[in-house]
Structure formats: C-alpha cells, structure tokens
Image (cartoon, rainbow, N blue to C red; front, side, top):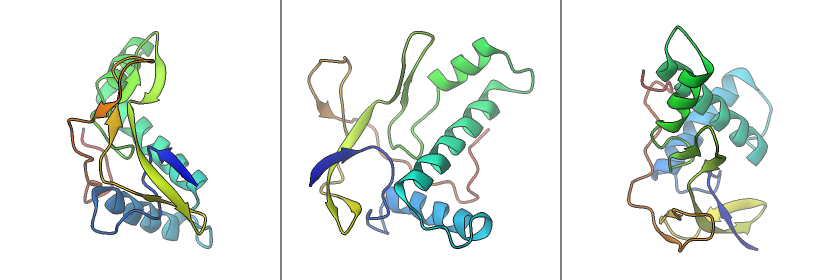
Length: 142
C-alpha cells in the first residue's frame, strides 16, 4: 500500500533524521514502556508529548492560553519533520508529509523528500526546510 506519513516511522533509515527520532523513542520506550512494541500509536503519542513539552518550554512559566497558542504557532519542526499549522483559527497539525509504502506492517519512506502546501487546496511543493534530528538529550530546546 502506498500512503503518506508525517511522523517518523520504525521503517525510516537508521542514519536519517527520522531514524534519530525512532532511536530516541525506542530508548524512551525501553526505559518507561518495557515490552511495549514501538507501534505507530506509540510513536504518535511520544511525538505529541515532545511537541507539547516544546510548546510549554516556549510559553514560559506564567502559562496563559494566548501564550501557549503563540508558542505552538512558532514551534520549529520537530518529530513530524515540518512545523505545525497552528493558530487560534487553525489546529491543522503538521504542514507536510512524505510518501511511503507499507511493508511488513511498517511505513517505509520511499523518498526523503517532505512535501507541503500553503493552502488547504493549494499546490503540493517540496518542503524548503530539513527534518531536524532528535536532540541528543531528547529534550526540546528552551
């Protein structure tokens, strides 16, 4: 099956930025979820937790809703490889995806190219940024 994905997949090449996120999530899983397979649902949960932690760090100690929305809107690319489409009016999530093939129950990226669109029905174009590798300590920058 050919499909798209926006999160790192267990099928990502180990030496790729997405592979660095998979390694981080496996390390976290081994410590805090022993015996739990690294499923797409677990990857989704860990990516969501990372993005929320990054937003909370950016929002600062005096948390307000406007401050959190502003922090979410300004987050750099993280586990999803692309920035989030997030504002007071748009909770769209990641602004891009990659094409892959499901093999053995795992999404294997067919290219390293992320694509994005500026509008809901706009043209699809290559993403100009790069998928950032996981931070060495596993924590978002503050």
